Image 1 (cartoon, rainbow, N blue to C red):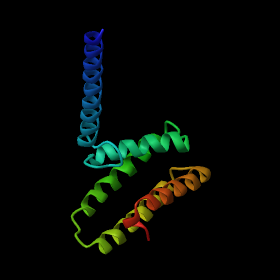
Image 2: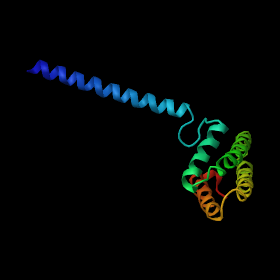
Image 3: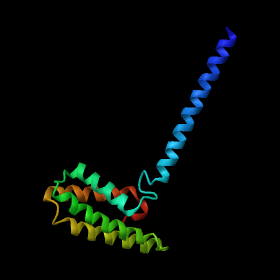
Image 4: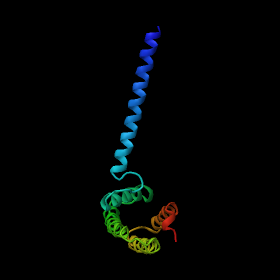
Length: 134
Protein backbone atom coordinates (compact mmCIF):
# COMPACT_ATOMS: atom_id res chain seq x y z
CA UNK A 1 0.00 0.00 0.00
CA UNK A 2 2.79 2.41 0.88
CA UNK A 3 4.51 1.71 -2.43
CA UNK A 4 1.42 2.57 -4.48
CA UNK A 5 1.00 5.77 -2.44
CA UNK A 6 4.64 6.69 -3.17
CA UNK A 7 4.11 6.01 -6.87
CA UNK A 8 0.92 8.10 -6.91
CA UNK A 9 2.68 10.94 -5.10
CA UNK A 10 5.57 10.85 -7.58
CA UNK A 11 3.17 10.86 -10.53
CA UNK A 12 1.26 13.77 -9.03
CA UNK A 13 4.49 15.70 -8.44
CA UNK A 14 5.64 14.96 -12.00
CA UNK A 15 2.33 16.13 -13.51
CA UNK A 16 2.37 19.24 -11.33
CA UNK A 17 5.97 20.02 -12.34
CA UNK A 18 5.17 19.57 -16.03
CA UNK A 19 2.14 21.84 -15.73
CA UNK A 20 4.22 24.53 -14.04
CA UNK A 21 6.89 24.22 -16.73
CA UNK A 22 4.28 24.48 -19.48
CA UNK A 23 2.74 27.60 -17.94
CA UNK A 24 6.15 29.21 -17.46
CA UNK A 25 7.21 28.40 -21.04
CA UNK A 26 3.96 29.71 -22.50
CA UNK A 27 4.19 33.00 -20.60
CA UNK A 28 7.82 33.47 -21.65
CA UNK A 29 6.92 32.80 -25.28
CA UNK A 30 3.97 35.19 -25.04
CA UNK A 31 6.25 37.94 -23.72
CA UNK A 32 8.85 37.32 -26.45
CA UNK A 33 6.22 37.56 -29.17
CA UNK A 34 5.10 40.97 -28.01
CA UNK A 35 2.05 39.80 -26.13
CA UNK A 36 0.43 41.77 -23.36
CA UNK A 37 0.51 45.55 -23.52
CA UNK A 38 2.88 46.04 -26.40
CA UNK A 39 6.31 44.94 -25.31
CA UNK A 40 8.38 44.05 -28.35
CA UNK A 41 5.47 43.99 -30.79
CA UNK A 42 6.14 45.53 -34.19
CA UNK A 43 4.23 48.64 -35.24
CA UNK A 44 2.24 46.42 -37.61
CA UNK A 45 1.26 44.07 -34.76
CA UNK A 46 0.32 46.96 -32.48
CA UNK A 47 -1.74 48.63 -35.23
CA UNK A 48 -3.56 45.38 -36.01
CA UNK A 49 -4.27 44.75 -32.32
CA UNK A 50 -5.51 48.31 -31.80
CA UNK A 51 -7.71 48.10 -34.90
CA UNK A 52 -9.17 44.80 -33.72
CA UNK A 53 -9.95 46.37 -30.32
CA UNK A 54 -11.58 49.33 -32.04
CA UNK A 55 -13.53 47.00 -34.34
CA UNK A 56 -14.97 45.25 -31.29
CA UNK A 57 -15.54 48.27 -29.06
CA UNK A 58 -16.61 50.82 -31.67
CA UNK A 59 -18.39 48.40 -34.02
CA UNK A 60 -16.42 49.53 -37.05
CA UNK A 61 -17.97 48.86 -40.45
CA UNK A 62 -16.07 46.86 -43.06
CA UNK A 63 -15.50 50.13 -44.95
CA UNK A 64 -14.00 51.80 -41.86
CA UNK A 65 -11.60 48.99 -40.92
CA UNK A 66 -8.89 49.51 -43.58
CA UNK A 67 -8.97 53.28 -43.06
CA UNK A 68 -8.63 52.89 -39.29
CA UNK A 69 -5.85 50.33 -39.73
CA UNK A 70 -3.93 52.73 -41.99
CA UNK A 71 -4.17 55.54 -39.42
CA UNK A 72 -3.24 53.20 -36.56
CA UNK A 73 -0.22 51.90 -38.49
CA UNK A 74 0.95 55.41 -39.32
CA UNK A 75 0.91 56.39 -35.65
CA UNK A 76 2.30 53.07 -34.40
CA UNK A 77 5.35 53.77 -36.58
CA UNK A 78 5.60 57.35 -35.30
CA UNK A 79 5.31 56.11 -31.71
CA UNK A 80 8.16 53.69 -32.41
CA UNK A 81 10.36 56.71 -33.19
CA UNK A 82 9.56 58.17 -29.75
CA UNK A 83 11.45 55.31 -28.09
CA UNK A 84 14.64 56.96 -29.35
CA UNK A 85 14.00 60.10 -27.28
CA UNK A 86 15.81 59.81 -23.95
CA UNK A 87 14.19 62.84 -22.30
CA UNK A 88 10.93 61.53 -20.81
CA UNK A 89 9.32 64.98 -20.66
CA UNK A 90 9.99 65.52 -24.37
CA UNK A 91 8.86 61.98 -25.11
CA UNK A 92 5.59 62.54 -23.22
CA UNK A 93 4.97 65.85 -24.98
CA UNK A 94 5.57 64.27 -28.39
CA UNK A 95 3.34 61.31 -27.52
CA UNK A 96 0.45 63.58 -26.46
CA UNK A 97 0.87 65.50 -29.72
CA UNK A 98 0.70 62.27 -31.72
CA UNK A 99 -2.44 61.20 -29.85
CA UNK A 100 -4.09 64.51 -30.80
CA UNK A 101 -3.02 64.17 -34.43
CA UNK A 102 -4.29 60.60 -34.57
CA UNK A 103 -7.63 61.66 -33.12
CA UNK A 104 -7.92 64.38 -35.77
CA UNK A 105 -7.31 61.78 -38.50
CA UNK A 106 -9.91 59.45 -36.99
CA UNK A 107 -12.58 62.19 -36.91
CA UNK A 108 -13.61 61.97 -40.60
CA UNK A 109 -13.57 58.14 -40.50
CA UNK A 110 -15.66 57.56 -37.38
CA UNK A 111 -19.27 58.45 -36.65
CA UNK A 112 -19.97 60.97 -33.87
CA UNK A 113 -20.81 58.18 -31.41
CA UNK A 114 -17.76 56.18 -32.39
CA UNK A 115 -15.55 59.24 -32.01
CA UNK A 116 -16.89 59.85 -28.50
CA UNK A 117 -16.17 56.23 -27.57
CA UNK A 118 -12.75 56.43 -29.23
CA UNK A 119 -11.82 59.50 -27.15
CA UNK A 120 -12.86 57.61 -24.01
CA UNK A 121 -10.69 54.63 -25.06
CA UNK A 122 -7.71 56.95 -25.56
CA UNK A 123 -8.20 58.61 -22.16
CA UNK A 124 -8.40 55.19 -20.47
CA UNK A 125 -5.22 54.11 -22.25
CA UNK A 126 -3.42 57.27 -21.14
CA UNK A 127 -4.62 56.76 -17.58
CA UNK A 128 -3.05 53.27 -17.56
CA UNK A 129 0.29 54.72 -18.67
CA UNK A 130 1.35 57.05 -15.87
CA UNK A 131 4.42 58.36 -17.68
CA UNK A 132 2.26 59.46 -20.63
CA UNK A 133 -0.38 61.45 -18.73
CA UNK A 134 -0.63 65.13 -19.54
